[in-house]
Image (cartoon, rainbow, N blue to C red):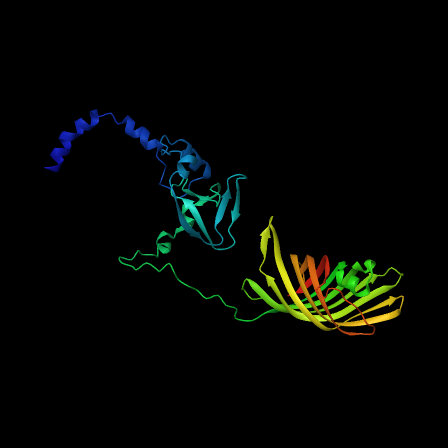
Length: 336
């Protein structure tokens, strides 16, 4: 029976045109041998009539696809789009990249300013979108109160030392009255100070001062009055304010001295007076940070009240409420 079917189909096969099949068979590679030369493989590649389609993806399209976070590991190659050079990542990094990749399967990394400089293959990027979405909005919650009062306090009291120098002019109304000499109304004053003040966070900083003041006055007869007094007392400083963009603060100190004395060469000879003194000094300061702490420039004004407690000569003071007033510049160094 099989032989009968083969006998009937043989004339039909003989009339079929198999030339196209034969040509295709000649173009196919020869798999009869396991070895092929490189030239044969290259010829076969160039003779292919079909090329897979590939759509070019523009950079603008990539930028408009949105971004997400990803992680890359050390040793990953990346390409600089400007120089077209490859670089290797040396440490783990988190990057933000665009969702759309280009036609070659590369992802483009977004910089912090929104520009694009780097690209790397998509297989090297591990998305971390699920890992960073850790917050789940609660179904019900109670709003936090808005009137929370927090106590701000200093855990450790800090005291900063300060050395100061004051130089200025004196309007000596009391000295003029005391020596009955108009020329003694003006003089020069120098002060040396050692200050201590707290560094707490309150608006007013308290402290203490120790001063030594030395002032000189001229007399009509060519003589000179020399005033000297060590004094001490409390000090207060405000917090810093900004005036025309510069930090400014104010200082006030009230000092006492039971050891003030003045000695002068008069026509009647050398006259010595001893006083109880009270000094009120206010100043405006401009601190400047330096290696030791703060260097402070200041302008001061001082009022001085003197009360006679001992004298070597009888005097007639017409107005005991007369004061000596001085003003000038100050230089200080705060050590922190």
